[in-house]
Length: 195
Image (cartoon, rainbow, N blue to C red; front, top):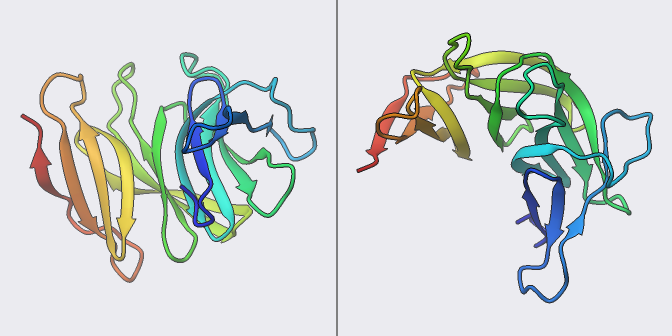
């Protein structure tokens, strides 16, 4: 839910605004994979993670989640624009699966990278340094993880993340890591382990 009480969901077919009361059908948000093309509901993509900073909603997507060669994008929607549209502001060159997304008080984004199974690459949390709310500056490996990080939540100087076992065998965890004033990550700590 956004700060202006609008509800958005992401999924395997697109990005939608939904009525929490269920009185009106979900509205699919048009998508553009570059700033020079018109947004369209015919542009299908798998969306992962949603976060908000100021009046901007961010998500990540790929047209084909099963194809590691399929481009991955950081998407942006300006809540003050009408009609609403998700537009790519950056193409990610890493072929990994991205999922959780969160924003800090300065507008920088954090993204979980679940790594890959073939070839085996560990997961990590990537920091996306934003030059402005609409312009990506750089991406950096903020925190290497043992397994496959998934959901993210930032609360003050703390970042919480869930993590699945690398081969999906074993127990999932909820972890916490401090965000130091110099922008680096502290040592992650497990605060909950499933069953």
